Length: 338
Ligand code: PEP
Ligand code: MN
Image 1: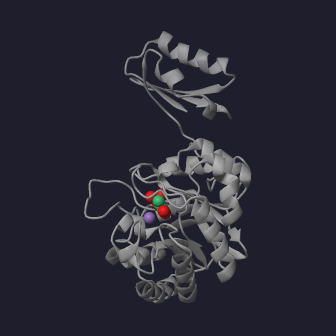
Image 2 (image 1 turned 90 degrees about the vertical axis):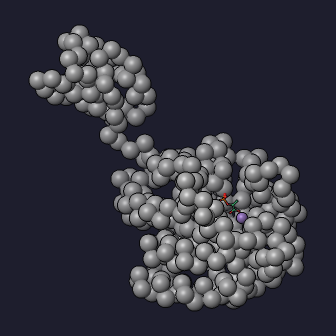
Image 3 (image 1 turned 120 degrees about the vertical axis):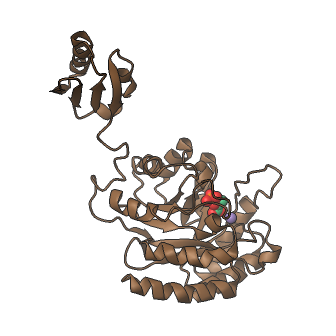
């Protein structure tokens, strides 16, 4: 931690900082300039105290942390890329993993049709929401437990792992019975009770980025999962809120290389919720793979015009199959495959 004193701070004010630092058993390194003094605080556990305890003292201009707030998800803690393995499918390696399916589970027929077409096109994991986090309480909330049962049934029938969202920490065990991967939605990225419960469950988890959260907050949220011993964590960029209104959310493409630099965790991209429109999904999906994403989470519906949720951003089976062909070329050009 670095404490920058105000210009002209008094000797007493500087001394009181030093005394407070020593009271924690830490050391100081003083940098006394002609006008300004900067105090570097040296200690192994300075992260446990708030910077405010120094910032409120008289004569202090600002207090800055040097260490990143996230730890277990950082490359500093683990230099090699982490691989997450789901039924033998590895995420974070050379192979690009595509997860595809409807926004919401609607019926057995819908799910079976989707499983058949996405698997044939090369997706290795099926998505489908049984619990839907809707902005309005009057929107379709998902089939809930009945939806989980359909997922479990279709997954067996088509031999394809599934990912589905868990909204409530009390449902983690129930959702885990049907799902191979738990999804934490954007709106729940900082639901720390839910993260702790999923951390304890040790289930593979996709942690979507909160649409108003920074990469630092996202990685710090991932630490909640990792600190409970769950290292099967996959990050998912799904777009953030900006002033731009021509898309549903602005896909932060730069978060992919930023994550790759700062973290060992695999990162996938959801182009569907960012785009908000099916016509924009392919370009965003291809850009994500070119930028280094380890996989994609794409909404596909056999009949988007009949979808109960997010029909406009859902690809038809034909559009999905076409995109998969294009993605193979992009993957190859960056030394990967699907
Ligand atoms: C979803 O993937 O179904 C979803 C609700 O996405 P997000 O949490 O990113 O809005
Ligand atoms: Mn959706």
